[in-house]
Image 1 (spheres, rainbow, N blue to C red):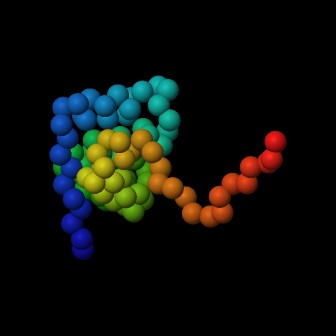
Image 2: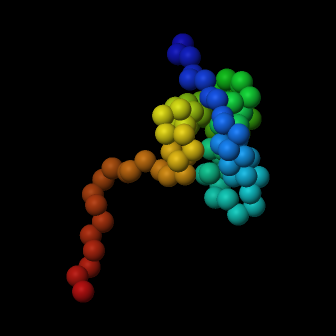
Length: 91
């Protein structure tokens, strides 16, 4: 079994995640990501976090890893999707 990377938050990062996790106008996907990271920083493992926020272990692992490599900015944007680029109608 692989060990999940440890999550350590600075005070400004923790404040931003708390704001997202409890914001009434924050998009749901950002609320989920913030809750995942706050629980990870509190020392919970991926199984516990997945059960607490009703998502998969893979999703928890993805966002934990993204945070470790890109910090808060990595949570605010989705990765580029594959597929054909959109076609724009000529003017």
